[in-house]
Amino acid sequence: MKNSHFMKRTPVLSIKQVRVISAVASCASLARASEQLNTSQSSLSRSIAEVEGRLRQQLFARGWTGMEPTSLGEIVIARCRHMMSSIQAAQEALRASGARIADLGHHLAWELLSAVSAIRTTGSVSAAAEYLERSQPDVSRALAKIAAATGRPPFERTRSGMKATGDALILAELHTKLLMDVMTLPEQIEALSGKVTGRVAVGLLPFSEQDIVVKVFGEMLSRHRHVRLQAVTGSYAALIDGLRQGELDFVIGPLREPPPYDVLEERHLYDEFFAVIARAEHRLAKGRRKLKELVDENWVVAPHGTPTRRYFEELLIGHGLVPPSQTCEIVTFALAEQMVMNSDVIALLTYSRGKMKTIAKGLKALAVELPANARAIGLTYRRDQPLTAAQRTFMEILGQRAAKLARAG
Image (cartoon, rainbow, N blue to C red; front, side, top):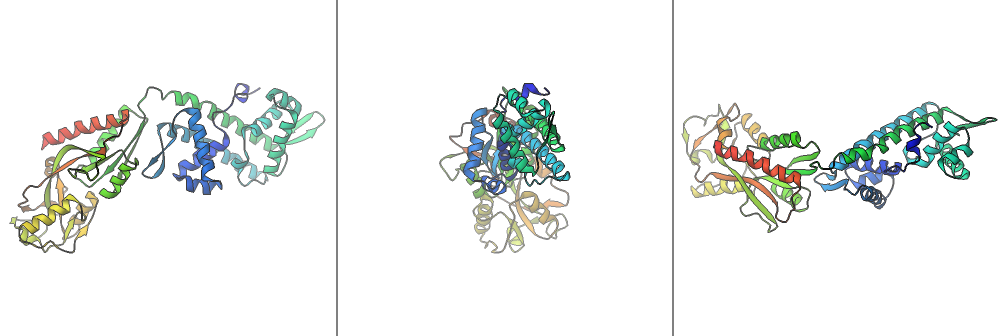
């Protein structure tokens, strides 16, 4: 019998679990997936836990965007999505031939599909039951369920046995495709053994050398293609909360020295330096300037509570000046530069020595004295965090690239 070596083996995933994994991955949320599948969150959790127990590895972890896949999860999800695509194609083929079916995947189970495939090949319910080592009533019930789902029987009874209809051919072909997908999955999972896997999720605060993370990620992927990499931007409060909750592994950017919570650790990488930036054609761009000439300008500065905002206000107050009450707060470095480039505002930003030498065309650092203008850039992470091989690799590559930046300065 075609694919007979597969048909008697127990698939590592049920079709219900395939649907659950695909839905949770697409929605990144148990709540939204439960609405999509019209089932309870607890039922979804149990399905995923059963698969994770069978595979002895985690498929999903709590992340910045919700339920995020692990390295193993990525492989399983890709296979489940391919299987759901095959189910959708079969459903469309059944509908095109007149079958009444709203959600084929909801009705499917391996025992139903194997019954259809076995009857198609053997020609009778009794022969199919014998081959499948199931009772004849059990196989008959499977046929009845398929008929109820599609609105018509998949076989016609004849004197010589059971004649397959177009529905049976579609379902038998679907069975073969799904079996090939699910039965070869353990081999793909086994191929991960001994490889560096896992997740590295990094929160990015505004600083000039943010592309250092992109370069580190690129080097990591060239070494370890199965590591899941993620970089997100946000405010300090949001990113630190994500770090404390385990949604992020690291936050990179200006250090607080010390961090606001005892559970956090900071690691210095290199220094950046404050500069007042304007567009190159700005009326203040030529010659040296004093702070009192700038205080009444429209400023782009970091939000209240940040080291940059504190430096800005203390600098002006130290010169007997009143900090402006109206400022433009932009938390993304590139957007702040664009704001300066396309208007008459000026901005207090930080740059590494190397970045300042290659400042974006159309921008200029004003010649104004800024005392004690070094700002520490580094990593913040949980002190008790046991580092995975992927996270250690990230820290190693990042440290090497940061050392080059420091030497270039």
